[in-house]
Structure formats: structure tokens, C-alpha cells
Amino acid sequence: MEQTSIRKPAVAGRFYPNNKTELTRLLDKILKAEKNKIDLSYAEKMIFGAVVPHAGYMFSAYQAIHFFELLRHIKTQYDTFVIVNPNHTGLGREIALVSHDFWETPLGLVPVDYEFANELSLAVSDIAHKSEHSGEVMLPLLQHFVDYEFKIVPITLSDQTVDNAKLLAHKIIESEQKLSRKVCVIASSDFSHFLSPEEGKFFDQKVLDKIAEKDIEGVFSEVRKYKISVCGFGPIMCLMEYSRLKDENYQSKILARGHSGEIIPSNEVVDYISILFCKS
Image (cartoon, rainbow, N blue to C red; front, side):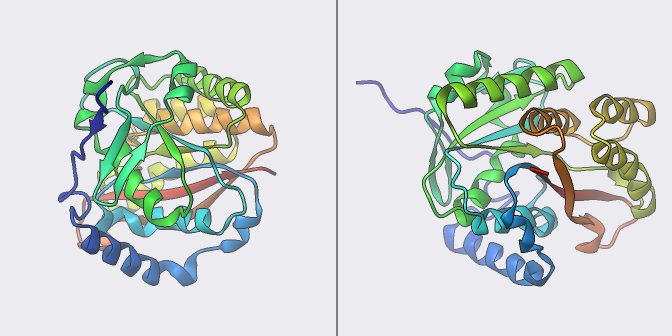
């Protein structure tokens, strides 16, 4: 009998509490603080996915929680959450799946949709995921807010080109259709890093404008031209192409926007923005 392979948490105790009670308490506290700002009217939409920040919960969950609370209120029950995240270590393949059967968090085990992952026909590179936080931090949020059984397909994207982003989006669509899965794509990304709040907002807006214009190449060129430190611009481009393939007239909507200086005052902050992608 084959032994079950489990990807152990790499950042529990650092990016989020490693204790179930403390973790639940923190998420409830953040939801209470944000609840009146969350626009639940978008729960009526057909949601394709979202850009979600991936820093420590004490900083970025105030923005991330807007998307996950929406998930709790929508009628659709997704079979599979495809989590596309950047590779901060640079280790492993340029687009990488994992071989693990489950990912573990303080809230329990999350099964990997190995059938969907196999259908993608991508390289498997566990080292790309081993110490990476940007996919892992999505899992306790999913476990806390989604009250039905689901599976995940974590994918790291280290070579963040337009071609790779589009290739991955097409593969996700093809696998979704072939297997008749209900899929939600989470593009894990923070925005500008270690700039003043004013500078970060200025440079972020260049990327946000291109997202609003559905201009994938524009996102890439703005990031490169101005050296904008949006760490998950590849996952963002992937979600844009995925949404376009689902509906050419798709909508994107900023759900929440903030920065680390709102928690700990500083002249050098990291920006966090949640953006919903849905049917027009």
C-alpha cells in the first residue's frame, strides 16, 4: 500500500498562528473588524477567482478576508481551488506542481486534486513549494470560510512571463472542461514592497489600470518598465487570461486595499489588494 504524502506547513507560527484555537480567534477578530466593509452583493455573481495578498495574517488578512467571506455566501460550491502563486525562493521548475496527496495546516488536511493536477501535464517540483509561503497562507482561510469539501491544486510560477501565464490559464480551462470541475482560481500576490504609502499607491495604480483594461501585456510591461515590486504579477496575468477564456467581458473589482503601515506605522510599507474576477 502506498504511503500518503503530506506537505507539512512551512510558515505556521510565523505568517499565521500554529494553534487551531488562536488561528480561528484571529480570523474571527479580523472578520469582525472588516464585516461592515464587505460588499456581499458580489456573492450573486459567477466568480472566476481573485487576486489575494499573502503576507502574515496580522497585516494582509484584513484585505484577503473580503474575498473569503464572499466565498462563504455564494451559491456555487467549487470542486477545486487552483492556487497560483509566485516562487520567492527561485528553486524548482518555472511552473511547478507538487507530488503530495495532502497539505497540512493547524485546521487539518487539505486534499490535492491529483486527477486535475495530472491532467495539466506540468512538471512536479516539490522543492519549489517546500518553503514557499504564498500558496500555503491561502489554505487556512479556505478551511475557515468554505464549509464544504474541496480539493486544491497548488502551482508555483517562477518564470512570470506573459506566455507562461497564458499557457497555464489555457491548461486550467482545458482540464476543467475535460473533468467537468467547478474551479476557482486564486492568484496569490502582494503589491508594492517597501515604498512610502504614497509611492506604493502611485505604482500599484499603473498595474491596477492595466488589470481594469484587461491588458495582460500591459501588466507585464508596466511591472518591467517601472520595476514595480508586485511579486505575483504572473499569477495575476494567469487569472486575467483564465477569466477572459470564461467570459470575454469579465469584470474585475477591487474588494479591499491597504498596507502594512496601517498595522505598524512605517515610511516603508507593503501594499495588499484583493481583486475579484467574475462574470459580466
